[in-house]
Image (cartoon, rainbow, N blue to C red; front, top):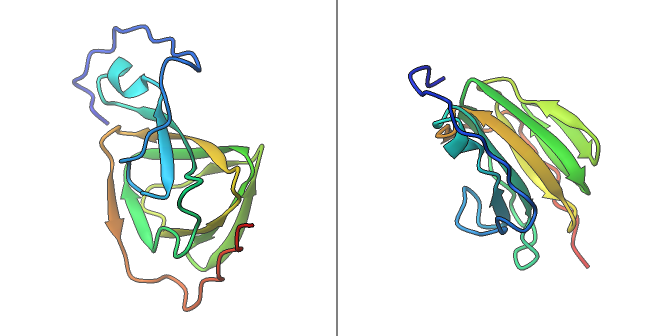
Length: 144
């Protein structure tokens, strides 16, 4: 974690203050910044992530891991299916997942209304593609 940053900012972001935008890590997701990276001097990022209605899941995220010290996903709407190493996991609205640092995973399916809150430290964490941890990943559910 960025221990040199002085955290002295107060932050209060309301729903209309920021918008969902593309251009994040994945084109098929939209991201809404909640101002926490700026408020913490880059120690933590907190953003909302949701399914992009114009780009349904086809291949998912592919196998990857994040170089970070802490990451949680709080599913607020809908559902997503992940492979965490060799185990398929359904994450539904209300579920909280601590993704331990370096865990290999693959988000391969999600509902049209999927939305989750993601909190990661540090804010500028890296994503690294990795070899598959399982031989087969189930196909995504077709959207209507």
